[in-house]
Amino acid sequence: MSLAGDYSGSVVLGLNRGHNNLTNTIAAAQTAVDEMGNLLAIELGNEPEYFADADQAITDGISWTPAADAASQDNWDIWVGAAIAKKAIIQAGVWLSSPSTWGNAELIATENTTAQEYVGTYCHHNYPGGTVQGLMTHTNVVSNVEVYSSDISSALGVGKPYVFGETNSATGGGAAGVSPTYGAALWTMDYSLRAVASNVSRLYFHHGTVGNCQYCFWGVYDVGAPYYGATAATATLAGASHIAPLDNGTTNYAAYATYDSSGKPLRVLLYNSDYFDGTGTRSSQTFELTGLTATSVLAKRLTAANALSRVDQGSPPTWGGQEYTNGDCVVSGTETFETTTVTAGAATFTLQAAEALLVNLQ
Image 1 (cartoon, rainbow, N blue to C red):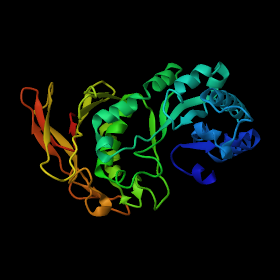
Image 2: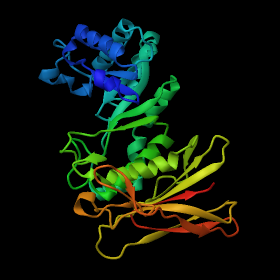
Image 3: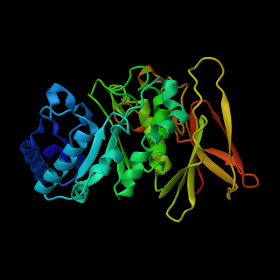
């Protein structure tokens, strides 16, 4: 806790609820408050749907159900929150199993006013999994995020943020043939933007054991391909006050617009999620933006040899023509912007399969 207290950012700390040792958990929470000036939230139990297992037994002869868990969470939120004298400190939910069986909408319906005062955020874990092609396909990204729409609406309905408190491409440290790939980088980008556009306030990307982590941004594969996708998403959102998806989520082609505080469009991120594994001819798709006021626009491209490209296999992606050096993440290469002429307020852009392009509008 003292080490986490030195971190320059905020920290969410998980404490035990399994085994039902309230005294121990309150003592730990009190220490956390004393040691961590950056403490943002406390989670009481990790993925509690699994508390029915013998080694986590929390109930005495009572069937462990969503209703039983909700009652436990409600009580513990009050007991722990009151013991440390902090309102809005609990990050509630924290399940891996999908809504609505295990969901925050159902949890919120059981809370009284007192319990809700101690909850600061509602949370779910999310690991879509699947093949590289399935993971990066835009329609799958949209349908995955939509699973949580009722949960998100319920949290916002009681004035609380909703977060993906633990997430990445696949469970268990990632899938060896999927998580380190450029296709997973494209998923990281698209998923992050779709989640934010759906009112998910934060995403905590899980980084597993050092040296045994397929999906880490940094680790066994040094600067892994997913880092490039995270970088593109960050560049899209930088300085923005609002984001809106421009597509309806029913095709492989996506577009996200971001806006500044005055409502003026900042950028548009275009994404072609057609799959290309390096064999045959790489297809392409054109995108047209209209209503543009400039005479030309600049854009940065996220690309790689194919969706299966991996940094550790000598085929890193490039972001605007640049790469990130293994070991220190220092950018290398010359930053490249593509210039596109605007004619009668319109501009056309061509993206190959498995590419993204960030178009600057200011």
